[in-house]
Image (cartoon, rainbow, N blue to C red; front, side, top):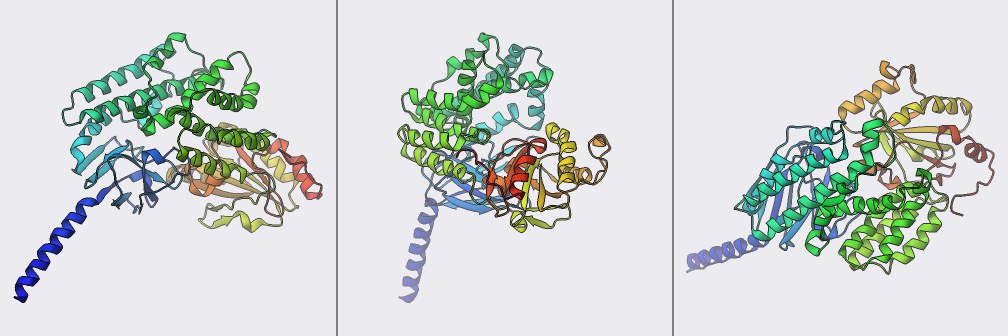
Length: 501
């Protein structure tokens, strides 16, 4: 009798365990570009690139190869992304998951030969993504092509991008394992991705062709692809649409600034974008437009009225969002910018120097600290070095620290940086032919480095001035040749008129 009871118990337990297992969804894989990182699994509706997003369904630590594994019992049918702590996604595609799926993904790194493999229970519906990736790997090689001067006119560039789009559509149409609802979704993803590339090209074209930084205004026929866009909820339910929102808004604003110079653009474009959003009927799409403006605040910080303007706009935006979660996402991320206001405690920096020793901003309390975020890849940064050397010479025996944060991507770039600051890079000998004085640290992964994220750095050079109490004087300070007056005021204990006050 006892044996029978035991057998029944085992059967019941096994049945229950199996049933319970089916409620769990597993997403695993290998992402070489995310070695030794913390990753988060998040539903697309809760994600916007670059912004701190909540809630997180699961968290995973990757190993030295980039292997990860998520397990969650909260999966509902829909699209999901994996993000790093820098709030950017790491998967090439949004992944459609259903409860009980056990999907494994392997994708190549930015520098490797393109490869994408998707396998496991429930992966058949995603087979199309592997064939699409062969047509459109969007890797370093592709990036070099679209940033080259091989396209003599903008219409030739558009023709090239259109040919990719048609090839992707053809691949999708011929795929028999993809459900129709996913086919419809993927078609809109392709449309958004291709439209983004076409609009971003206008930001870069003049520089690519003639090293001018101004915006390129194309032949009107270039914009015919805009008629394909339908900003409905399905279109909005993808990372591609969220990335496209900022490109779309910039295109609209640029058209209004065509006859104005660049200085007017930098002063007024953010306000123009905000007013444009206010005039639109509220929808998920206008929420994306509003969220996309946050990336412009890094440039807005350069204006003395930025924090006053931000307070006004923040109050206005509270009434404009269509989805409550998007409003909360906006407010939470805007708070990070208020944390950079003059008088706030400067976010600490903890980064390695060329020997691997960790240097902390907090180590220099009691001294004025001038931080220079730069990179060996950045031409304006290199050209500023003579001014930086003169600046350091002026304050040689005074309580001023010059902290140089190099934004370098990988091990090779970091090795090149070490050679550079040692004054041994012959290519740049006219700028630096001896060891570079000052305190030097490196931020691996450039702008994506988690340690510098609180400073909202998205261009170089960027300079920050910190006073003797470790408080921000200016999160977007003047360049080396323009900063002496402010440093002198701090050393002389003269009250500085703070930007925005």
